[in-house]
Image 1 (tube, rainbow, N blue to C red):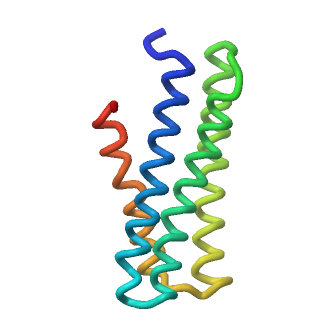
Image 2: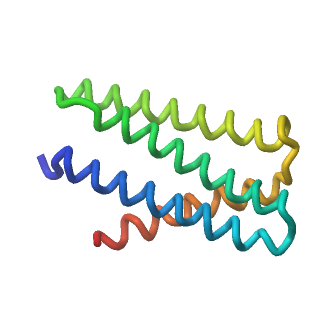
Length: 121
């Protein structure tokens, strides 16, 4: 085994913190355009962070065999994308927030994946 469960948990926590900081930064950046845009951008990034948290809780919950680990990873990914798609639908259609700001926030949260995996800290 190359990586331990604790190493995966630390990486998931680091990624979650990077995504939450991206939510704050993109929200502050969009504050110049207005309150609704700032909320939409921060919410888009926060939904990505919530999906990452859901995936990591599901994937790193138990120790088991390889088949169980793969199953937990796949169900975690499905739950993550359900959270992201459902959250974006709520942001854009239920709350009627600006879609471009929400999508930009989501993209910014995923752009920090490169930083989180690059710097092992």
